[in-house]
Image (tube, rainbow, N blue to C red; front, side, top):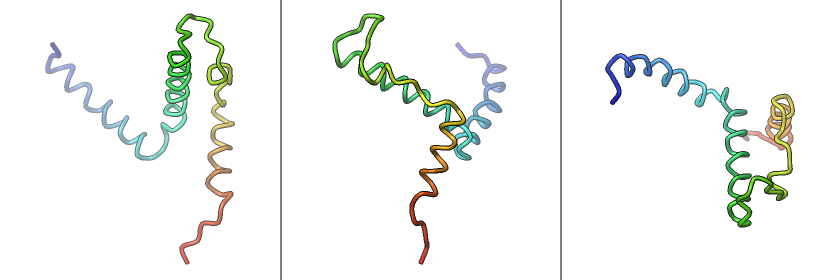
Amino acid sequence: MISTRERVLRIPRNIWSWIRQVSGDAAYENYLRSARRVAEMACVDSRTVQAGCSTHATSAQPLTREEFYLHALRRRYSTVSRCC
């Protein structure tokens, strides 16, 4: 059971987490979490649950923080984006 003190201490942490999600600051952490989930699903789907699962999804290394940032910039500015 969670005490009242623990609940009160969680409020600022939850607010900070929400701000990071809304502002896009947590995008890299979300990407890593998603990449890990995809790799785990690939292992389960291929029925190779053992530790040495070697599918393409798990063998590909996730992007570094810098590579992710550059990829996001390219994705954002590589297309025409006009309002009129």
